[in-house]
Length: 139
Image 1 (cartoon, one colour):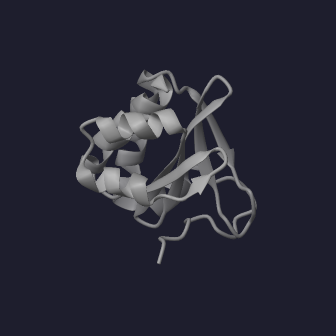
Image 2 (cartoon, rainbow, N blue to C red):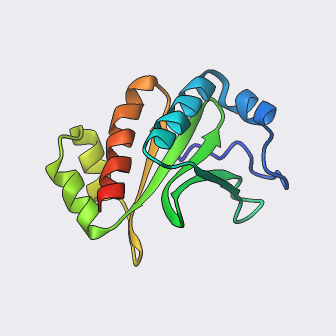
C-alpha cells in the first residue's frame, strides 16, 4: 500500500509549521532537497492540490517546466518525476542504483512520459534524486 499524503482532507496549502510536524524527522531532509534543487536552478515552487482527497504537493520548476514533485507524508515524503524517453534512456545509462533503474523500468507510462515515484526516508535517498533531476534538466 502506498504511503498516503499527509494533507489529504486539507482545503488550504500546508503552513511551514504543519509541514514540519507532518514530516517529523525528515523535515530537514525535505529542506535539504529543496536547497539542492535551488542550486540546480529550480527556484520556482508551487503548492498544488488536484483534489482534497489527493492532498498537497510542492512542484519545483525551471521557468515553466515541471521538474519534480514533492508530496509530504507522515514521517517521510514522496518525490515524483515525469521522465521523457530521452531522460529514461539517460537514466538507464547512468550509474544510478539498480533499485532506481528497476523502479524506472516498472514505472507506469503516460503520454507525457514515465511516472516515477520514490519514497524518501533517509539522507542517503537524496543522491539518486539529485542525479535524476540533473538528467531531467539535461533531457
